[in-house]
Length: 259
View 1 (cartoon, rainbow, N blue to C red):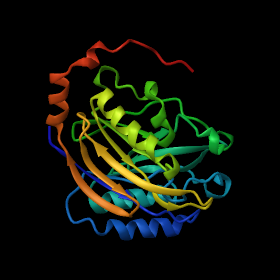
View 2: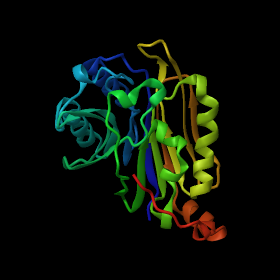
View 3: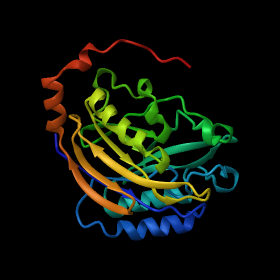
C-alpha cells in the first residue's frame, strides 16, 4: 500500500463569515507546492464554532460543499472538514468527505458539547463512518468525540487512521495533547488532529496544537499558535509493523454500543 500525503490547515477562522473564510482558506491553500491526497480543515471551518445555526446553516450541496468540490478538483485530492448543515428541520455539525468526482460521505458529530450548549442547537449523529483512500481506512470524528474512547475503539482493525477535526480551546489544550497520543497507541493507528487558532466570537482562544501521532506514539507533525498549511506523509508499514510486533488489538474485550 502506498504512503499517504496529508495536508492540514490550522487556520484563523473569521467569526460567522462564510465568504471570508472560504476566500481566506483558498488563499492559504494556494501555498501548497506538492502533490497531496487529502486536505483536512478544522471543525466548522466556514463559520467558527457557533450556535447561530439558523442564520448560517446550509443545505446539502450548498455554497460550502460546492467550494469543497471545486477545491478537491483543483488539488486533485479529497477535501474534508465540518460545517453546519440544515436537514429535515434539524441542524447537524456535519463532516463532509468530498471527492474530486463530486461524490461524498458524511459524519454527524456523535458527542455534542453540552458545556457549550451545543446539544440545544444540533442533533447528535448515531453512525460511525469509515472511508477508504488509496487503500487506507480512515475514521473521521469531530472535536468532543475525542474524549470518548469507546466510540473511537478500533474494533477488528476497522481503521488505520483516526482523523479529528476540532475547535478545541487552549484552556483545555493539555487534555488535547494527552488524549491524542493515547488514542493512537491504544488503537494502533495514526491519529491526525486538526484544530483552529486565534480567538473566536466569544473571546475563547485556540492554540491549535494540530498534530499527527504514529501508531507507536511518535510525533509526525505538531504546530502551536500559528496558522499553518503543512503536508506530510504517513507510512502504512508503520501500521503493519506495530500491529505485528504487539498484536494486542486481538485481545480486546468484545462489546456493543447501544443508544
